[in-house]
Image (cartoon, rainbow, N blue to C red):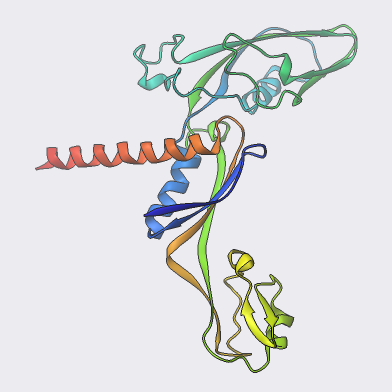
Length: 265
């Protein structure tokens, strides 16, 4: 198995890579683990001290829960795996405080004050509620690690993949202009009156395209062993952290499976 990075944009929180010499089972398992089982920090409980804004407590609590929080996986445990057995300690939960009194204005996520500087809202300009004259919002929120399979607010990313396109010209193409006319992704071009593959555009190929009716020498197929992955982080973790943690989780699950098989004997 081999991985070749295509694009890595830390500013946009995106990465794309080719997973080579693998199979659909492994590719889809990796994708599902990234989305559903890589843990992230999110607000789970909210205790309101005062709220006379236009929004009910439940609505504000829901909005707070959906604010992505920077996550430090080395410093926190998932509650059920913590030594305190989920009772609550500084290794499995974090307190954030919000006190806002405005004559008129919007309360933003950046006003959430975290007791851990490493864990704070990813996007400080996310609006929570608008306060009018005389209105106040005071609350204490508790954030914990969780996974996307429990609630989407704990999912760290959007991950998807496609089969790597294999584009071939197996012989002389009699009418290259006809291919160019229906090729909306520009994966072909004409050089010296011959149809050639634009190697820079191969990965943009539409696997549903069928050129056989125009010329059987032009073929677009899907690789059985290579996959193009795309990962878009929501900001809690970097793409690199998400991929590395997903692989670690898969290894742990396989080790656990082997141990259970040994017990079955």
